[in-house]
Length: 240
Image (cartoon, rainbow, N blue to C red; front, side, top):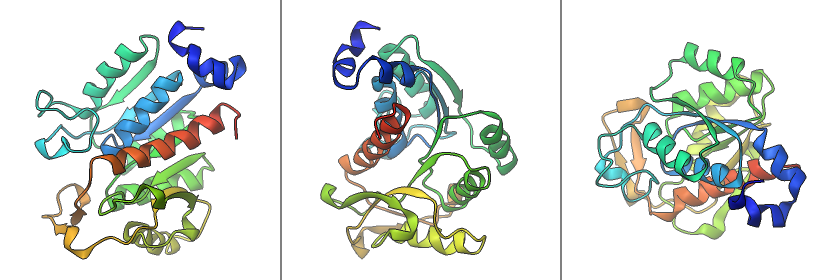
């Protein structure tokens, strides 16, 4: 066991450490939620990650995304994170896709990867729906992030089946679209029951499938990522 994992080993034991090292997790979307979720997996000793995000760091990302600083503006979000993760664990195996995946590419990746868990951290409606439908159809283990924007209260964050979500406009939109393809439940999500203020919403030009977005505080996407990583780590290590 590596020295840097001693504190983790003391808590969860040698067998759980071994299991995490052998696992391969797919994370799609490396923004405020996905960047932190990915780092929590790496620091827990998960042995292999496939990371997907075609976006570049923008100045507006600095308030909430792990890899975003004034020095990384204009750089690949995925590549910046990969360099950071190798510094945390030089032995981690990383597969980086620094591009937006078309539906056929997503299908090829998800079905051919033999992943132990899939983490959906996409913040755009259409590609998120495609991934959820794909994962459900192939009976894959996955968890999906709902809307962290417009939220301030950490105590309102929950993990539940999507059928049980409330006060999340993003989840409501996802549920409506999923029902059209026959999916009503069986989708594990992290969401918040806090009511979003109307004045925190801004419309966009529709770039990257997004027609609007909410203002976001620094800690909330990170907490969504923490909740997701906690669920995945405990399941992969046999602790839940």
